[in-house]
Every structure is written in C-alpha cells, then in structure tokens.
Amino acid sequence: MQNITSKIEYQGNFQCVSTHIASNSTLKTVPPIDNNGDGSSFSPTDLCATSLGQCALTTIAILAKNNYPNLDFIGTEVFCTKIMAPNPRRIAEIKIEFKFNRSFTEAEEQWIYSKATTCPVALSLHPDIKQSYTFNFI
Image (cartoon, rainbow, N blue to C red; front, side, top):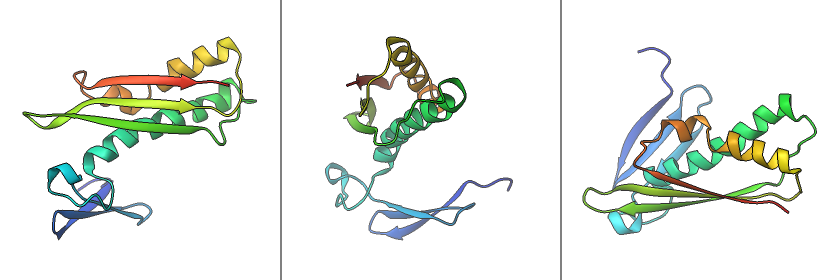
C-alpha cells in the first residue's frame, strides 16, 4: 500500500480506534446515542462535520498568511452542527458557525467567506449535503 493515511482497528462494542500513520496520534469513535452508541466520543459522522469546520478555519489561516499577513485568527471559534436524515441514515446538513474575536474590513470579510466556503472538505462533500455557514464578525 502506498502512503497510508491511517489505520482503523475495531475494539468491540461498536468502538474503533484510528491511528494517524505519520504522527502515531490516535482517536476513538463510537456511534451516537441515537444509533446504538454511548456518546462517549466522536462518531464518524461527527468527525465529518467537525472536519468541515476545521478545514474551513485552517484554510483561511493558511491563505491569509500570504494574502492578508496582518490577519490574526487566534481565538476564533467554530461551532459545527450535524443534522442527520433517516432512510437511509446519512448527514443531511452541516451548519458551521464562525465566531471571530476581532473586526475585519468588508473586503476581508468577503475574502474570509469565499475561502472558508470553498475549503477542500467543502468541495469534497456530496452536493446533497447542505452546507450552511454563519460568520459572526465583531
């Protein structure tokens, strides 16, 4: 196998442990309470929603380094909400809410919006998954 990203091992009781090959860091997933899990950790669908928020925030920070070097995103919070649909069970919508702790110019706000909503995870999700974004600027 080439360039393996991660290894997943089933632990029983619907729990999986994933290991990131490059760093050896691990994370555990369990199903959500409404789907035979105990809610003690992220579920795989929680990770999907969280990945969208993390990717959007990371993307604006990376791209700002070259385009807006004076922008600082330290302390910015992103809240991710996953909405499931039944039959078949799937993610129907992911809501991403940014809470910035500083103000930006209108041009900077537009730039942040355009980059966050076109991050690699946003562009990789199936178009049937609704992506809703809220940007709370001071």
